[in-house]
Figure 1 (cartoon, rainbow, N blue to C red):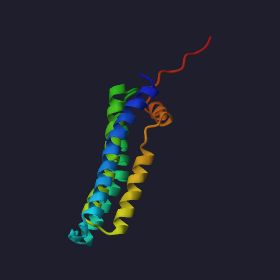
Figure 2 (cartoon, helix red, strand yellow):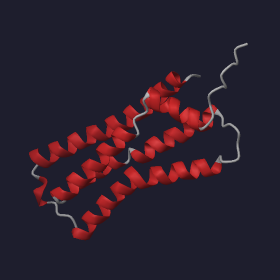
Figure 3 (cartoon, one colour):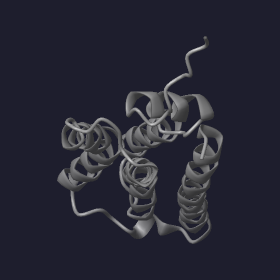
Amino acid sequence: MDYIGISKILKGTYYRQLLASVFLVVVAYLLKYFHQLDSVQVPGRAFNVVVATLAGVFGIALPIFYRSYFVYKIRNRKQISLDTFIRFERVLLTTALVTPYFLVVSLLLNMMEATNILITLFAIYAAYYYFPSGKKVLFEMKIFRLLPAKKKED
């Protein structure tokens, strides 16, 4: 399988997860504004900090940690299998795309606007940075030595 096929597989995973979270965010906004959810109060400011921190951890820190762990795990291999690579990329996408779900929680619990903005920035970063474009997949395949060596011309 070439990098375009892998990119299509990963884009399917990406869009399924991202569109589900976007749908839930839209539903949360509709519930908030049409059903007057202003009466729901969050337990305290500490809860705002915890939710925003978790959004940052899932959007930025855990994907970096998982990638580092994966590189450490395969450090002595000359090459990895295609299935291992696709599984790694899917877990990386899933970890990063948990972040928009924190925005749903924040909206439904009527948290501070600063928390909503921060979580939105984390979600936009995760959605942008981890988009599996063909160029990015090709680059990752080169890093993990998945492409066959070029043939020497005689």
